[in-house]
Length: 367
Length: 139
Ligand code: HEM
Ligand code: FES
Image (cartoon, rainbow over all chains, first blue to last red; front, top):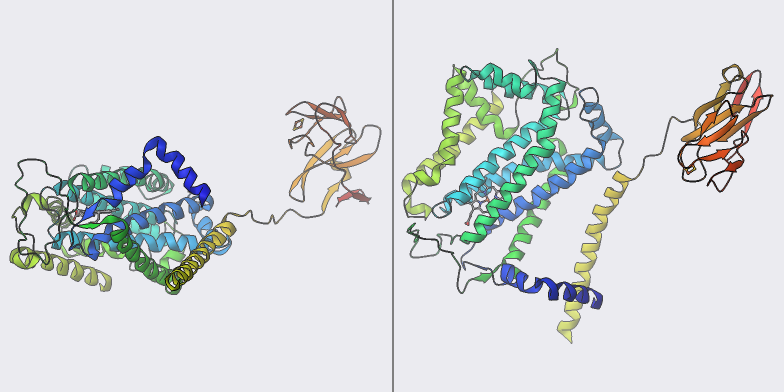
């Protein structure tokens, strides 16, 4: 302990580490009415780190070659000690990440935290959502199972509906006319290098913005719930008299992470194949399309939308429009009110939107 | 005194749980990364005598490492480990000179594995073998 203190002292007199830590976490004040939903971001950070660690471990045995990928994954599952654990953590973690991401978004939506001056926080968050979708989609192909192969075939095919460039785009995505070894090469590079780096950079930006602007005050338990920022000049939202991030809110973050981790391990140990349909256990076969090929649960609504519309272009346009609307939400909804119960139009639209998404997901699942 | 005791107890419990959790992470991680036992490389290798003409050497895998069988010019078989005793490179057979050269730092060995020159500190390890009906069994 004494040695530890001496090391810290040594560093401290050189770079002022204690002072920095005190300023950044000890004197970092949060609104007194802060709630548990503000810990979703920390859970996401935790999941992101878990995905990186388990991903690097999988790289040790995984072989990104169309002839060997499935075998190498089977080897990890059946031969390597605890390989199943590492793989299951990575696969289940990817699904949980999307789930927590949605919770984070919903909480930001309902508390109106995306409103000015936090538009950029929302926009970077939205880009993170698309990147997480991208990393899931590219990761799905890597085991080179029947599921991987055909889900990717269908997903890349939908770009065909785009006029003029559609055909070329599909070939470009696949690196050939059909999904094949060339597709695996590019998806592998995207999944393990390009998208993780992009996510890392955007998380950095997301947190930088949070740090500069200050955490929002939740609209609950206050008389005045209107957004007080006039948009005229930069203002840091400190919270004089608020609660400290460390140790107070850090404990909430840890509690939330622990609860998340318990749920996560519950799935990993008691229902590991929750997210694995049968076709995930058969090696890819370019000549046999399995019946009922479906995407992951969080793409089911997109899948069903494409199915409902007789014309693929319309289906794709509707989705593009919905995503654009979501991305630009802070610039569309600019009213100052932040309390959900005082925003009836917003509430109806958001709840309607969530129900629509859930409905399409369930429909997609059973169709 | 009472609160100090409680504090200590809780601290111990927390430390114990943390240690347990750490062990539950480190053990699988270690097992995952630990080298797998080599399978497939038999502990006995059979080589036909006609495959090793006079003055030639034949390299093969033995017990997970490289080995060599020499048919010395003028008669006599030797089985050796082909791993140089200096820093572990694989020695080469020089047919014209009838000796082993290690390409890494220029160690030389006789066909029997004795050091002639260079940095190797020890002779190459001899491997036991038997000969029966024109077949050599090493191991
Ligand atoms: C990899 C994914 C993400 C990570 C790691 C992440 C992380 C975080 C963290 C640590 C915070 C601060 C604490 C909190 O309010 O939770 C935060 C705040 C925020 N995030 Fe995210 N986030 C992610 C994705 C998203 C997405 C998809 C959106 C919405 C489209 C979003 C919108 C916001 C907004 C508006 C805030 C500010 C909240 C406030 O100050 O009250 N984030 N994020
Ligand atoms: S390793 Fe053979 S001479 Fe150095």
